View 1 (spheres, rainbow, N blue to C red):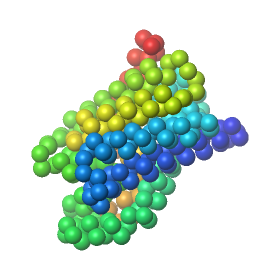
View 2: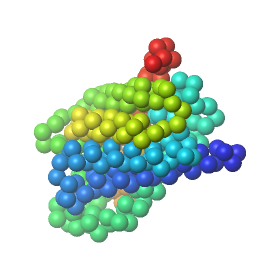
View 3: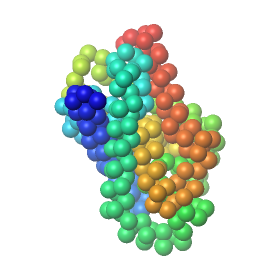
Length: 258
């Protein structure tokens, strides 16, 4: 790995760490601690996290912060294929370390939450406390009013990633380096998507953001509930579907450049 690529990967790691740390903190404050009381507040935190992560990491890398974004940029000819795996692994590790940090910070609150609600970590239903890490469908906070099949969950995640990439291509069409306006618009896009999609799937639209924290939950004792129905559920919905949506957006970008 060249010095330049190592620097870019470090930037992707740092940016993804910041984004996931801020966003998953908001989820924890809403669902575990109870300080945040609205989905819109959580969405705002995620939007701010995306914006800050881009602004902090843009000096070192393209600030993709999402393997699906990296795939789309690669298909669209805006990123080299040789950078796809290094970027994606760096993003995954950034998300994983952010989740590890949050587990240390919120471990006591998680235990209190589980005791209060009669949750035994690793038993069926313990996903209710694991939701601050990986995502689940239907969203555990809304499962009493929503019903989401595997197909609908996968479709929502693919559409969310597609819309995000269409917006990114449009927002960044005239500039190579991100500025505050572009970063803010991308953050706003993520926040709006969360408002619409999160009641059903928690709105992952980022394979690294989901898989990294989910692996932490798996190692921390949530067992099967951390990774339910791996290939027909968690992996297909939160990893493969965003890739498919992003790839479709990239294909349209090649056919009809904005």
